Image 1 (cartoon, rainbow, N blue to C red):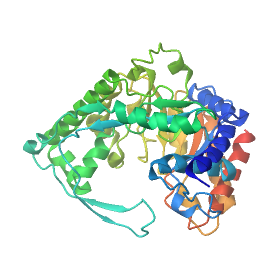
Image 2 (cartoon, rainbow, N blue to C red):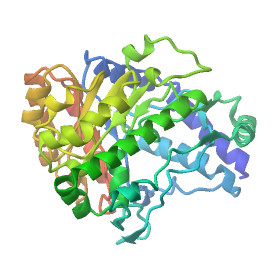
Image 3 (cartoon, one colour):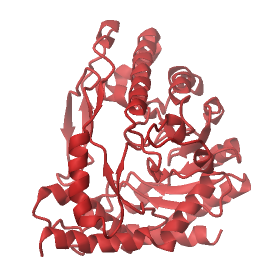
Length: 413
């Protein structure tokens, strides 16, 4: 079978998923949660160890031309998820072709050592070299110059349209803020300083850290401004990071598709390396800068793996905050009581539960029932987002069984 035939067969299957009532319902359910008026909690599974999934051979790429591999991979993975562990998966009712966006960078490159226990897994250990040790080092940083490669984008669009346009629409899309445009200041710092250097400098050299965070905040704001000027922001993204993006408040903001603004989309902030600092220090060294970085956005999703259960009051300063990540290291009881019905609790069940030879469904049920019970008691809108899954110990059935368990729970709420 030639490349065109392979792709068209996959596109037909993708289109059936995209135009299904189940897909429409998943988008509506996610929007209701984000509107703080949930019909029921939604369940998403993301950041999957795909290198362990191909038990039926359906994920094997078969196109000869490597140009098609990214598209083929997306189609195969979507079809696979829909077949085995769909949860409340959402897919676009069109084929997205991303705008080719280039950046000159911010003036530094990562120096690191990595260690991999499994060469087929993209999850590896990193040891970063400290490149910021003084005020002078901050001068290395500069605002990037963002450019849009329209020619290459259109070439891809035309080539993909020739194969796919009679099956489903093909659409050029910009960057989704949850991924490429999140304000990840502290993740960036963590790539250029060791953990010890970061935490000791917060105590010993606070002026230096403030200068560094301020510079990176300026860089983020400049980047957002350039994305607005070049019309590179996607207002139709289904996801903000691994969670649903649909929200009525965003739909009600006037939208000029030729000049999409940050106010039309979600902003996202996080500060994972500050997991162990006090709420007061988290406020001083991140939230006070996040207020400026998130101000242009329509809604804001804050947090990732850092436990934020004891920092909710600090987060309340963020304008248009709508969703807070509640990681496996947070206490859902404390978090839900502090959140009440004011925000969405984006609850991350522990991915270690699927990193076993055989899933213990009783343990999973206990964890998920506790989350649901606590959030219901406090009238907290919540979603269950299983992510950061580095391994299932070579047993995809663990994910299949986890999904069934989670969906049974939410469908009975």
